[in-house]
Length: 318
Image (cartoon, helix red, strand yellow):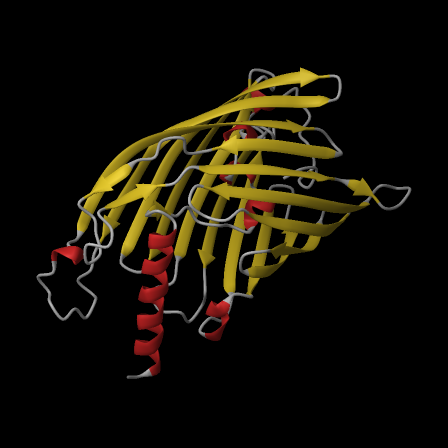
């Protein structure tokens, strides 16, 4: 058995075990770049950048591990009605092994100004599209119904969240997927009889602390706690330094599987480029060269919508 075959067998074994241990829960991707794009976690984040903010992301997880997750993500959001309302859109394409899962969601945030900052209450709604193609697997029995392909199984879902933010701190809580959708007639050798989407809970917050009198160098600590039905609680602890709102360099500790290093660089008044590398700490590191994630963010004022409002600096909050 060659090295690639060993890795493939190991991956399939681990993948099936994870599904079984998480009560056949459909997995939502874990991103590192939520640090710069909170709409990934919370629909109430929509409109927090004031101007139109569009981001394209690519995540290549567990490099050199055959069948490992690869994810494309696009988001866009903007404030409206003098920063009283935010609208957003996210489109996600996640592939792992023989599976592909696409998400398309629209989000709405009602933004309430307060003396201490802004409080946003948000909702999102959309569809998940699950597909599976096992034709590339070397099966002993190609007629095994346990590996019957799944084509474009559509399921609606919705979620909600709250988010408070100002120039020095932010805090949010969200449940982006409230419905435990099931995908019937999906099983592996009769071990599973249903693939079911999980409910997630995110609690996140952080600070923006000036380190000099000119307030052009900041320390930005933050934390994210993830809860998922059928899986252990996990968390990220993030710390970064922001220089002149041009360069953000930091590191994260993710208790389940990684230490993450990340950097964001201002390319122009409109464009920021972000890159992160996940140093795998779990047993998968024996077959993986880590995880790469890239993001390009574009922000622009729309004259008829944002002409009289002040847009926050890029790194004021996640």
